Amino acid sequence: MMSQESSVQPPRVATWLIGLFTSDSEAEAVPGDLLEEFSHLASKSGVAFARRWYWRQTGKTIAHLFAAGFLTAPWSVAATVVAGFFLRRLLQRLPGAVLSKATNRYLMFWSAHFQAYLWLLNGMGIAHLLISLLVGCTVALAAKGREMVAAVTLALIFCPLTGAALVWVAMHGHVEGEWVIWSCADPLAIVVGGLIVRTRRSQHRDSSPKRLGVTGV
Amino acid sequence: MSGRDYLGEFEHVIMLALLRLDDRAYGVTVRQEIEFRTKREVSIGAVYATLDRLEAKGYVKSRLGEPTPERGGRSKRFFRVTAKGVTAVNRTHRALQSMTDGLDLVRSYA
Image 1 (cartoon, chains in turn yellow, cyan):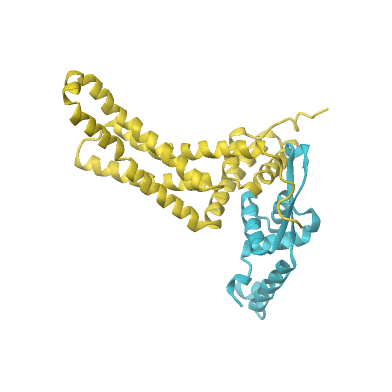
Image 2: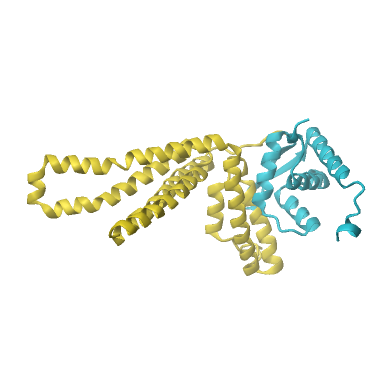
């Protein structure tokens, strides 16, 4: 019969987060090792203690796996991130340019349907968000095996840039709350793009036949 | 001889743990061995990040064991030090020894 302790599972969110950053060679070993130690700790020191330990290990492990993912192939990750940066810079002008052309071409129509024009204007935020999501997906696809490392690095680059833009706008004019929310959501959309690609890849990997060994000893 | 032939501090500790554990060396045992002997908390991520680096340098080799139920059906990844790894450990050990030779660390600097 299964004991109460052995049926206790570690925090699912923590396990999911670790799965996002593990490489193919660590995909089984790292979560397996953590589960083994968690079960042992839960039966020895209690579930609450084991859960705290698991979260502590999760935080440190993700930091190390993130750094290792970058350091293992620094040039390819950096090139992917830089390409993603310029791709977003290029694409982010697209919704504005399309809107501008449409406005000029169908000026009479928009004058008659001004509410629709306002709705379209507000939709610009969504368009920017979708572009960030697309860029996040593209960067993750390009950084095979290091999806989250590349996507999070790109998002981390945009965070201070967004902050600086907000400060600049605040100093030179009026900042609308809605615009602030859309701007802050952009880096998050990049990470979500990375998450989508990583999750799809993990599902594909889990459904493929199991590897028998990493390197022969 | 290039500087790359020497092990970093944590790499050295990991290699010594692998040599101590021999064929029982996998993530959990390596982590626990280091915590037990050095009294410092080590994350499993730090252990694997270093082991992957050592494997890339050719100092260790790994293989997957059988999946076990207590690990949720996941396999253990066993590690073993290669001959090149043993040479690197010895070289690093000798370098450290020659640096500490003649120093009375307990009396002079305590």
